[in-house]
Image (cartoon, rainbow, N blue to C red; front, side):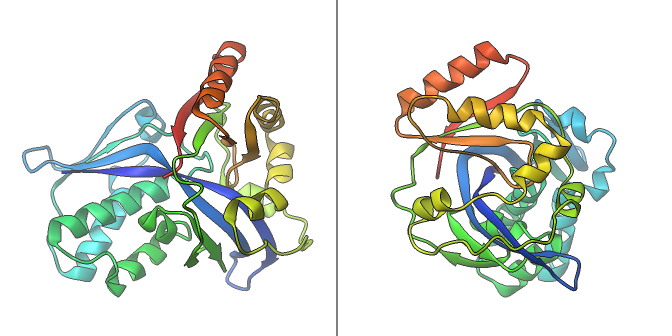
Length: 279
């Protein structure tokens, strides 16, 4: 059994205040690519978590038992009183510490896969409770559709997104990991205003990512990535995703997206890139 772990992007991300629980009050629009990592269950495989894929090596120093995928599987099994499969595989196609929900998307994918295996509705409140315990982005990643997120990012509501589905998307990462904690810690506590409601693309275009200037201060090459994306013909929106360092661009046509990918691959062959589209 296989389940994709769709890459997450934040079309906009407004930081409004720091909460007493240590999290930040945010307003964001989540969107998801059609591609990403993948989770598998193999009844005949070796027990534990097996890592494969281009970025498996980035997780080599992490305890397999502490990986968010295994934690999610164990927690969901305990919540539903079900035996967790012994052999779980993670194909790591996305860079880590990259602002595109890699670990959260992986945990969400194993939740969806186990719910399918056990014939448990994904809407079961026990499933949602586990997702929220795993991380603020995990509930959105479980849904993996365009959503508005408030609070910690896990107060979710749907937004009209038919116009976004299938829109060409280019993800670019300069192969520089950037941890979320230092980026949020650099926030100056200035509330720069709310994120608009309504059409998600219009709201995103009128909005911003409040973490982007902070991430650029820690990782200046992010400015180069966004600038290179924004200069390409056919770009509708170019921005950093989440806390970085991955940046994205939405295009008005697949041809424009492909041309941009070819240009950036020629200019910066050392950068990671994924050409895909929104779900």
